[in-house]
Image 1 (cartoon, rainbow, N blue to C red):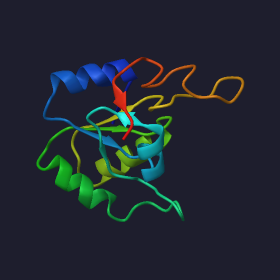
Image 2: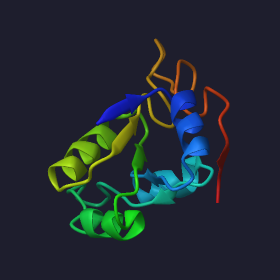
Image 3: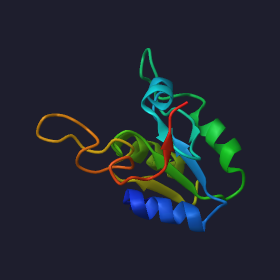
Image 4: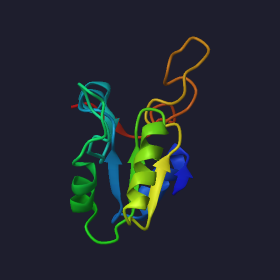
Length: 128
């Protein structure tokens, strides 16, 4: 799995329209915090128990069909890295993780979106 900085991931997605962009955060994060434009939602973990989603692999296989690259994003890049390793373990040949995720690392005041990440870099996002 290759880690891409947010701007690199955006450029990759623009130059590889066959790639599947998966936001693997919880449903609440996806809906209420916002999400990258064009990303589909397949939760890696979700409330109330925060266990690994037993349907994650199957839903990702459907979305990616045959040998399409998968680009994963979460809040900070940690869950998406775990999800990416899981996909590689289950035969996905080309997986990318968006380093720093959608909201980025926390700053000295424990705030996000101020240091790095998809939104910090001004990349397209939406809230539905």
